[in-house]
Structures are given as structure tokens and as C-alpha cells.
Image (cartoon, rainbow, N blue to C red; front, side, top):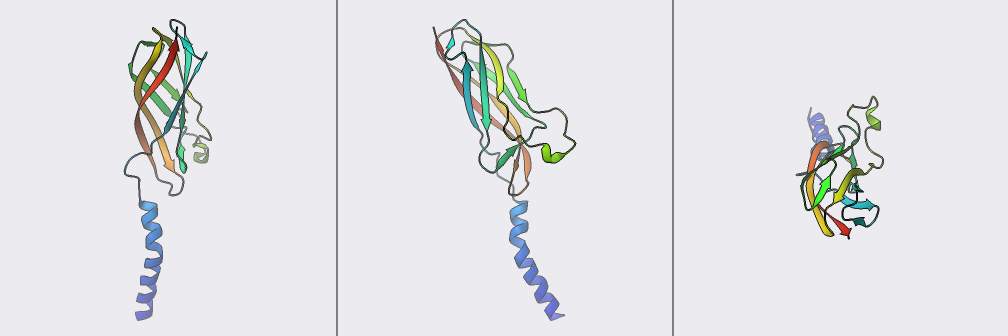
Length: 153
């Protein structure tokens, strides 16, 4: 009986760190790197352009195709957007969940017409669903973004 008790204590001591690490969840969603590009470059005042916003997760984080990545524009300085929301991903859960993570997310695209030259800023909220590769923990995340679009005359 005593040997069984010692064995259980040893097994618990060995497995406890793995169980604690698996059960740990981040205090908040990881911060995504957000990169902006525009075509034609540079954007010109009064002429339509396509803005692409690329979302890059930190190392060890995967972004999911379902429910996708959305960027909603809240504020814009002298910029007319054809739509203030862009989405990449899928609206339906894939049959094989192993295929749910993006290998590399496509950029979010916006059609925009700048009203004036200068550095034009816009702000919004990025929504995504992420998974921590090492633990398998998955959760929704949100991040405020502020981007600048240089516009020439």
C-alpha cells in the first residue's frame, strides 16, 4: 500500500507540470503585426486605390480560416472607403479541422479614394481567432489598429 502511494505521488509530480502548461491560457490575445501596402503606389488624391492590410501572427501562433479575420474601419481622415469592412477566411467550419489554420492569410483589401494629399490615417478593429501551437489553446482575439496611408497630389 505504501509503495502504491509513493508511486502515485511520483506520477503526479511528473505529470503536474505538463498538465499546468497545457491548461495555461494567455492573459490576453497575442498582438498581430499589421502591414499596409497600396496600389498604385503612392496613392493620389482624388483617384481610387486598393489598400491591402496584411496580418502576420507572432511565432507560435496560428490564425484560423474559420471564423476568419475581419477588419472594421471606425475612423478615417479624408478617405472615402467603398466598404469599411474586409474579411478573409471562410464562413463555414472545414470538414477536416487540421485544415482550419491559415498557412499564410491573404491580405484584407479595401477600395479607397483619398480626398487630399498628405499622411491620411484610419483606425479600426481587427477580429481574429487564434491558436497557440505549443498548447493547442484557441480563443477569439481583437486588436485596435491605426494605419497611415501616404497620399500624393
